[in-house]
Image (cartoon, rainbow, N blue to C red):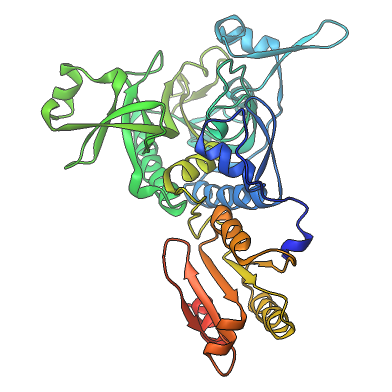
Amino acid sequence: MRQSKLFTKTRKESPADEVSKNAEFLIRGGFVHKEMAGVYSYLPLGLRVLNKIENIIREEMNKAGGQEILMSTFQPKDNWEKTGRWTGMDDLYKVSDSSGREVALGPTHEEIVVPILKNYVTSYKDLPVAVYQIQNKFRMELRAKSGMLRGREFIMKDMYSFHTSQEDFEKFYEKMKEVYKTVFNRAGIGHLTYLTFASGGTFSKYSHEFQTITAAGEDTIYLDETSGVALNKEVLNDEVLAQLHLEREKLVEHKSIEVGNIFDLKTKYSKPFDLSFTDEKGEKNIVLMGCYGIGLGRLMGTVVEALSDDKGIIWPEAIAPFQIHLLSLGEDVAVLKEADTVYESLLKAGVEVLFDDRTGLSAGEKFSDADLLGMPLRAVVSARSIKDLPSGGIEIKKRTEEKGKIVTLDELLKIFKK
């Protein structure tokens, strides 16, 4: 994409009403547009990141045996009354039409997915099943803050699994722990993200969160750095430490951001809807359930919080909007021609490239924008780079490097062939 054609523009000033680094950089870079507290629209660069995160998640859910569906956002009031959450869920948006009929604006989808499965599950032969979706969710978050980390409207992957036995559920649950680790590794924050024991609430003794360590985090976890086992602050007590064979004095306190969670739902939602199956003996049993969530925008915001520097974003290669940011410096005809040749060659090779072909800007302004936007690799065509190599040179530098080097076009293309 030619940057001169990109309708969004970078901003030098930070948004006055945002204090989080992820919101500051994502808004300044033109990745997202803030509509109101906790609500953002995704612009071209931001949507490219979101789509790449979505594709990673979809690939891993499919590998795990998940079947993708898309459920309704409007949810019947009756379903929520059956589970007791119509009055019991504080952050539920309730919408009325002109006739006075009320529906829930979906914050989660247990009340929809269970009735759906009831139409298809009757026998033990129909199980296990795992279904998931990637969809907008709505929660009445009165403390909407921290940019993409705490929203009223957000995009989430929610998977629900259905089982005939606790043993079968636990087998799938353990597999999902590894699947989640793979997702976060692929998204570039696996080295900072830990499976964390948390309170299970009404569902079970424990749930598990995936917490990414960053100073901007709202959560506090305690990490045993030897074993890699982490505890959420709310479950830190002597009983839990004994069960997990951890020593309090060896735990290190960290601030962190929750990027995913998995729960044992048992029969919490299947029972109210009588989602049951007939076993091999012909006896009726209630289906056991688990659920597994990842917020896509939250993951994007966490990457920015955890990996950026004071100049801007540092996107991991797998989710960067473009693989390379090509800059043309100066108004020299030879430079402009060479930069255009490099751009067309990269496109022909199937490389995702953002080409800063804008005129009337200084080198410093272009470098500053490149650092803010954070592509993994920067390539610069200038009078100096051309002069350094008789056949025409390009200065390349990784976003994390201080100094670059001059390469030929062929050498640049070989980087992406690898």
